[in-house]
Amino acid sequence: MSTQRSKTDELQELLLTTGQSHHQAFAASNGHDPDWALWYADHMVDRLNTVLDAELTRSDLVYLLVGLSHEQPMMAPGGSWPRFYARTLAVRYGVT
Image (cartoon, rainbow, N blue to C red; front, side, top):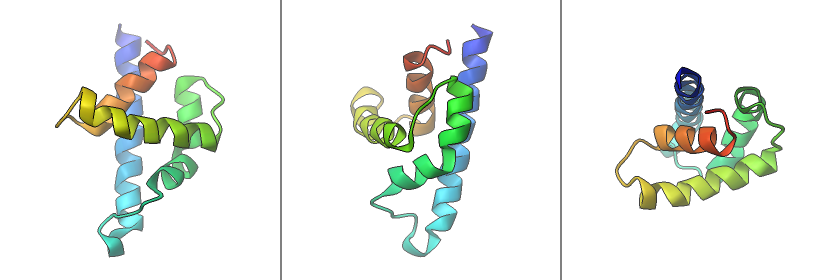
């Protein structure tokens, strides 16, 4: 169980850091970026693959991120998106 918590925490930190970097990169538009998933994928695909022990392409990651962005409001409304994404990815990729 401690391994899952550790991987989930690592994923959450990666998502939080990426989110902060994205917001800084798009500060002029108050973080608004309709293609945010593309930016996130470019920024984090290598590290995410290491954490998940996976071989995701940027396209795979864009697909996952957009899907999670639609799932989160239904499955965890008002919840922390980085935590939801991290837990979901940890379960889907068996790093539990």
